[in-house]
Amino acid sequence: DSGVTQTPKHLITATGQRVTLRCSPRSGDLSVYWYQQSLDQGLQFLIQYYNGEERAKGNILERFSAQQFPDLHSELNLSSLELGDSALYFCASSPGGSSYNEQFFGPGTRLTVL
Amino acid sequence: DQQVKQNSPSLSVQEGRISILNCDYTNSMFDYFLWYKKYPAEGPTFLISISSIKDKNEDGRFTVFLNKSAKHLSLHIVPSQPGDSAVYFCAASPLRINTDKLIFGTGTRLQVFP
Image (cartoon, chains in turn red, orange):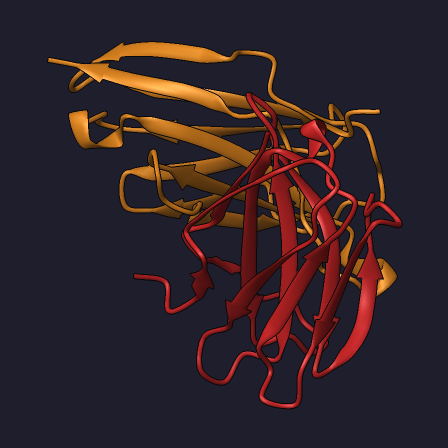
């Protein structure tokens, strides 16, 4: 158990809909990262938050947005869903700060868009 | 543009033998490298890392080698055990530009057979 929790575990929805994925980082971690893993692909970095502020952005679509709340949990909002958005979405956390710390991953949310 | 490449999608090794997983990268801004292991239906688990100032790092049965001039790293597992069967992801981080986001390869599926 990494200490990172993600809900829901599975999500099935239709094209055009909007969903929210939730992540709670490990206790004490200030950085939260979101990654997307499509079929047979590596994990693609989407966005990073550090202590409530956006720190880095990857190949995140304009239809996607995220935020980190004062209690440090984070939400990833996906809107106007398309079939190609079907993927595993992972959240990771780390202490953050100036030096590198390995990231700890949650179990993921499997999103299926029909 | 795949900045981190794992050209072998799968590897099969006999129990007790050495497993060697390879990874190549193209971006000279990467200065921290990690290996993650992933079982089905779980998030990636951190295995071992190496900073660009080193060329080798060991942790028990796992050793990572870094060849900066060739932009190549490898993970050696000795001896291999059936429980090592999983997908292994190589990842790199461009820490020097003030973000520790991870750029992942597409993974190598390792199967260790008795």
